[in-house]
Length: 280
Image 1 (cartoon, rainbow, N blue to C red):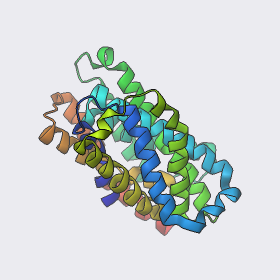
Image 2: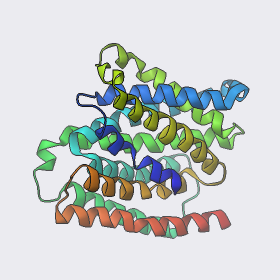
Image 3: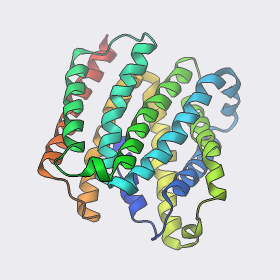
């Protein structure tokens, strides 16, 4: 849950970066810096990549698409909306991946939580405004981010389940994703990194919400199924929404808040589902 709370600060932190900050460039820099720090922590354990290169390659692609899609969505639709859509889509995508891989079905409570998420997502996006017309690209970016989040979680879990070290796995996924996204740094504006506030924001995004958070995230993948891990990150939209309303003056319609509330209400069910899965 603490990891999810850290994740929930990313959108607001990006919004507090200097004016003119490029979201795609920020995403690429975050992956490179945070991933490099994870590599330093992992050290010699990184040599395991040869035995798990297929899963790590797929995961790195997922990381790159997730990061760029999510940061782009936050700038287009707002932090609260982008975060809730991303996190609402991810457990549904995770279950589809699990079914494709013939993984055992989750506990029954998971399905109730999934239904609540689905209804909440519909209400959130179709909140009676013209959002679908004006924010289509941002909504699509958030949906892609959610699906990609599920993909790299699955890939990381596969590598760890096959004996890979969890911290090394996260390091290779995120630094690999950063390398895939790095060509953007040659064509996007990086002037904002020359400002003190830009450096502070990037330090938070890369070292706290990525390096520190994903060490703990990797530990979680040692004992829990990817579907369960994804569901337990549902605290993230709650944190993101509170921060966006408090510090960014964002607003959702009444229908939108009902949708977000349904997503958040699924969190206790996800926790109960996790305990049931561990027992069985």
